[in-house]
Length: 322
Ligand code: SAM
Image (cartoon, rainbow, N blue to C red; front, side):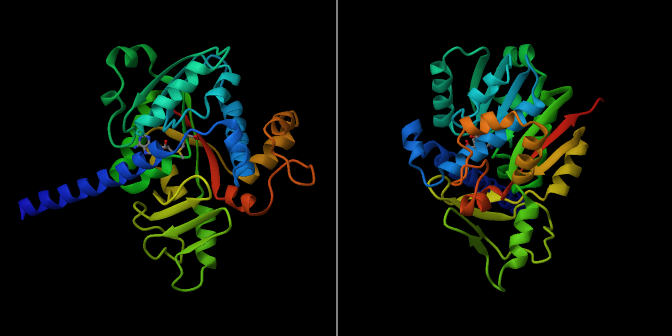
């Protein structure tokens, strides 16, 4: 029976690696489109809106001269946002090595940048970060002021072990009082959709996005056990059929407490937009520059792209003492 346990463990490991390699291959294969190609995308408004929300969250939680760890940095799409925030240093890590090289390239080509940056390819969720970060760099740079995980933490909710290793990596990387910020699909939004599904139906969406559960999703909205609730997310022109996992938010919040991370902010994207722009009207200048404008000329997002944006939430935690 012992060897059967090992066999089961080995089978699980193969399964886990294959999911990671699907994710890696998918992102590696995505071309790094220039600005002009992006402009003709059917989800151009959604991309602008998402970028605006990320800018707002970065602005709210980062301080001048901060050092930032970007876990799941992708092609470095947030480098300019961090430059505008006035940070001092940036460490980017992603499992997709081709994306990491593109991020490095993007940084090299940035003009008038005011911060240093280091990039690494590696799995930031299933292994300790020290497996990828050279020891001397780790000692010189860590703990950092901010850990950011944009549109990627949901890949870690495949298993409890992976989610815990990810949180351990976040917590160990942060100084006391440091911030952990991110954007993920909202489990509330997911549950709302599941409860509206006709019996036997496992998917929903519109002209720009589609969600398809692997197994029958729980109708009562309770994800038990809270890991491995796999679905495919299709986004017109972006993510095609990459396995993702539900992040039941209350489970995430409770688990984060085990790692001395206390929730300080949690809002759906539309709420972030409404609240932050009414508190800080100067954000409309940025919204205008980023083309977060509806067809009638007012600020915001509309139609199917609006519903797709409502799939996400933004969060922030603070690292407590001890
Ligand atoms: N944060 C970037 C952004 O906002 O533009 C990229 C987001 S992209 C939707 C998700 C990223 O998560 C991909 O680049 C993917 O390679 C990365 N990722 C997935 N699993 C990972 C892991 N185990 N370790 C590090 N990165 C991972």
